[in-house]
Image 1 (spheres, rainbow, N blue to C red):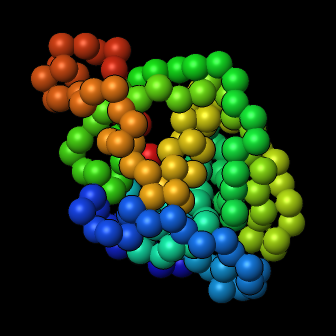
Image 2: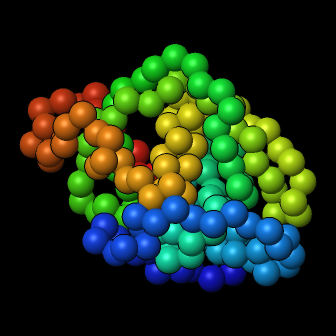
Length: 164
């Protein structure tokens, strides 16, 4: 597999709506595997295709040893609310305080085109929402309540940064 270059805030591809995937083949599966390798290499909890400059509706999420490779994902149910710090591999060295659902259900396809439904709670729900936002050209900085600065972290040991 290959490690892809992650593009950062300011690149116009991060602001575009990704196109649905219609071809399910070995090339798509290789791309999904590349996303996983790139996410892991950069210590992320998720990565979306636009973050590597590919405007296709694909993302990967890995939380608590659960790996999801999602094609054409859409959130079909939300429940509860959580709020906390969030970071992003495409927005390096920044963090924000973001509200997300506590639980989400996502309908998607796998790399073979088979329909799957995944449910995520807590950090997994946050990561799923974050990556699906990327597919719609939305970054966490667009929806955060406020930015979190390094000195805030030093003052509050309870805050943890989740790099999505």
